[in-house]
Amino acid sequence: MQLGSGAMSNSVAELEDADVILQIGGNARDAHPVIGTFKAGAKKKGTKFIMADPRVVGTAHFADIHLQQKAGTDIPLINGMMNHIITNNLHNKAFIDERTQGFDEMWEAIKDCTPEVAAEVTGVPAAKIKEAAELYAKGPNSAITWGMGIAQRHNAVATVWCLANLALITGHIGRRSTGLNPLRGQNNVQGGCDVACLPHFLPGYQIFDEDFFAALGGDPAVARAVGDKFEEFWGVKLNRKHGLTSPEQTDASVEGKLKAQYIMGADPVTMNPDANNVIKGLQNLDFLVVQEPMMSMTAEYADVFLPAASCLEKYGTVTNTERRVQMTRPVVQPYGNSRADYEILIDLMNRFGYTQNQLGPDNKSTAASVMAEMSRTMPQYAGVNYDKIERRDTRYDGVRWPIAADAEEGVRWLFTAGFPAGKVKLMGQDYKVNSQIAEPPCDEYPMVLITIRDLYHYDNMEMTGKTRVLMELDPHGVFELNSATAKKYGVAAGDKAKLVSRRGEAEAIIKINEGVQDGDVISNFHHPGTHINKVTTAARDPIAHEPELKACAVKLVKL
Image (cartoon, rainbow, N blue to C red):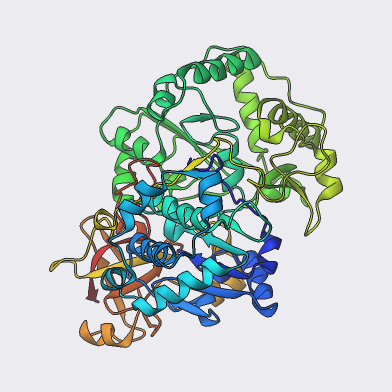
């Protein structure tokens, strides 16, 4: 939104050649193990690492500087770094003048957040904040990566704005091995966003709702033209008002305003916050369709279940976190009556009276036809086709967007010549209104739950939970806390306990981990037996509507 692109500005392989990497809000070793290997390779080549995470985990073990901030204090931490950079003239004044606007206003927002003030709020010593600021600013090529610990927060947009400010004031963007690099949660989150699995967009991040675009400061005529273009291409009249996000759909179903849902590629009962409320919403629907390769907790509430082929049973593509479009290929035939998702959708549209001509003589030709439609309607994908993907799909190469229709190779790093919107506005954020989690601890709920991803399991475990070796490595949910916190609450390693929040309860086994801060408890969200999202809060970001899945107030009870 700020820079004009919602993806990694640089490629993963470039991390190996960065001079400095700042990782915040994520543990790449466990949550993004492929990217974690590139980071390990970078360390061997001499890259300096700054790790900002409430836990001593993953990269923190070999980080040159570990900033162990309190949960929810990312904005004052980043502001403290920027304050030190500007105060000591380490900012890139030429880049700021040429490529940004609003520097004075941003400085007004952060000038009181000195490293000493940030230290009081975050718990990170001021000397470490200054050291990290100087290391990142001096680079000379510094990259920022972040994970769901930043994205799944009630102030996610504000926090990412701060990270963008940090890169912009130092000029660490628009070059190789620099940039702003969000690490997406799954292998095709980027691709799903690209093709408009977001209610405010049509494919290619093209806004069609005139009122919404005007509220963002855009020209309504541009949104009107987008809607007109897609109506002409698809040959149908479109509803010109944007839809609801997943949490908003839960709200509407609970209130009785939403009567039916079609859910595919998602398991909101397991993966969305405040799961008891999600279940209430599903039970309140008149009709629910679930389309998945395997049964899930959500599918148990479905009126109709449509069996979908897995990625190993069909041709298709995923677009990963570095904007690389990669092909999936069938290695086995679809099981039983399952079919590729797009074949099911095309068949349904034809039955509904919206004639679709993409179905080919085989699965690959159908998938290639869908990709051809994408390349015609999405400017970023103009040069993407199956022949090119197969020709270029190697570890360091691949097809990345944006790619022109006549180009053989896409853009590896963005913003070399400038930003899509011209000079980027620096969006200063006041740490005083963004210095804690949405639901801070209190007398009744004195602990902070932090949810994480685990190395051995994937999302709701519908696949990895059926894999014997992975279940042997990680058989059940755990609550991780340090020995001092365990002693305070009368529990020991191996004890069974439950976490209780304002919304629900979850049970797991106690595990002692001295890398956890006092008063914090860590749990992954994978294990259905624990079902930690019965506890988490549905508080959400006011702009992106992303829920705060990563932290909430709880109490611990020994069982």
